[in-house]
Image 1 (cartoon, rainbow, N blue to C red):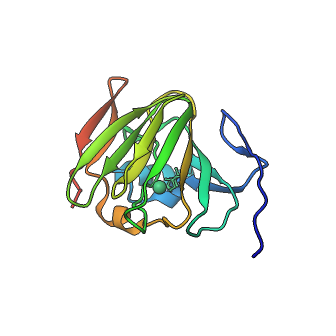
Image 2 (image 1 turned 90 degrees about the vertical axis):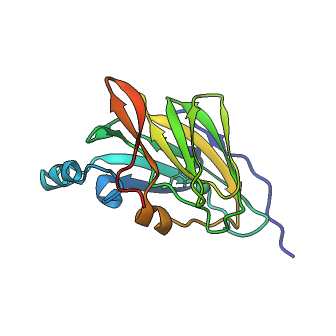
Amino acid sequence: MQLMQPFSTAILQEGGLRPSGTLTQRRLSDMRGMYADSAAVDALLSAGENPLIYEVDAADLPEEAGQVLYCTTTIYPGTIGGEYFMTKGHYHAQRDRGEVYYGLSGQGYLLLQTERGDFHAEAMQPGLLSYVPPYWAHRSVNTGQEPFVFLAVWGGDAGHDYGTIERLGFARLLMERDGSPSLVENPRYR
Ligand code: S6P
Ligand code: ZN
């Protein structure tokens, strides 16, 4: 059997792996329907504005059992209709696979929910590890004025289910209210 060789990667506090892995950029047009204020989304896109919401630099590793995958995520600061810039969010395709997030720079929140109706919001900051248990969908949000960057580490066979969140959304929205983050019920949830 051919064994992989050990290696090291630098994790940049401002986001990114060195050497770089695979870069993915998510713009507003990639997230239609995810922000509650669809009129605000349409207005920006039809004005030709398509802001970069977040980017991921993911280690090039096989997505299979036994591997440990990792990436940095950089969420840029901003709001759409008062809702902070955020990731799409997902369940793991294999629901019983957990994950850890480790804050590198900036400020944000991790929103988590389960299919049986639990919801949880966890503040994230540099130096803090946030644990995503099995069965919890997860979305991260930048509530600060600068890029919010974190490292994620998860099992190689977890996979990603984006469709469930695309259909149902998250139970609560993280909105900027008087300059501070505020969780509000998502009127369109379920
Ligand atoms: C992967 C992990 C993160 C996210 C990344 C982007 O399991 O949870 O690396 O992929 O933060 O979020 P999303 O929801 O677009 O994959
Ligand atoms: Zn995940």
